[in-house]
Length: 302
Image 1 (cartoon, rainbow, N blue to C red):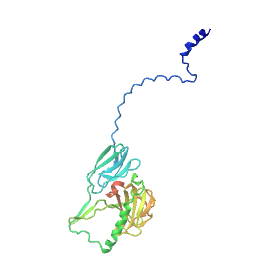
Image 2 (cartoon, rainbow, N blue to C red):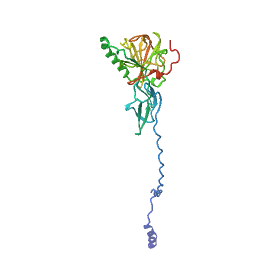
Image 3 (spheres, rainbow, N blue to C red):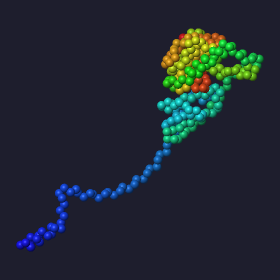
Image 4 (cartoon, rainbow, N blue to C red):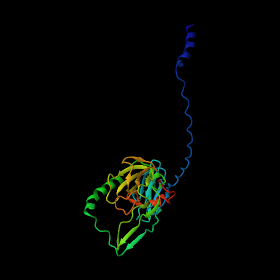
């Protein structure tokens, strides 16, 4: 009887009974997926500039830099760039006949755009029997440095204004009595060229802002040459100056809108009669308001 019971238990001695809570065996790993072929990268489009305006001596241009531009140069000098990639450039009365824009993009690429600057035929008057203007008086020499310092300080300001984006309008219309760039040669010695355009109208004729901007100079008293002088900063280095005014209706720091009356024509300073002398500059470049504003239309404000 004992032998029979032992025979029944012996086969169970070599068996392993799994525990009730043991985890199931891990599944076999799936075979690795075959590598996908790498598609060739699409080449980036070439960076492009978009520019419009007058590429000429005394001219002004607006442009859009290539997408992704982080630095813009004109002939090696840095140019301000708006958040939307827009910019303004201009060419001095005596600018060279070529100009190069260079953009550096965020991915390290560079793009260049060469402009051909058209020459202008300036009105030159040769006075072989007339000497150059005599030496200024002692009073002029005493006062002039401070006046020039005020003008320089005003034009060096960089106000947040968007007038440079607008189509520039005439501040007053009438008979043009003086052209930008005109120059006299006295016995072979050149005098200073005319730095603006003159519009002859009676004293008291209103003068309006040719574009939005900020007043950066409003003379408290007449300057020796300019008389009652007003300067508007249109932003991005572009500004307008109005000379010989009979009155100034705005003060420094005021924001003005295109078409807003800012003063009136007069005959203050060194003049031979009432008129508006309108001068424009972009940075150090003197530019031609007649070329920028285009032909006059209408009779102007009265």
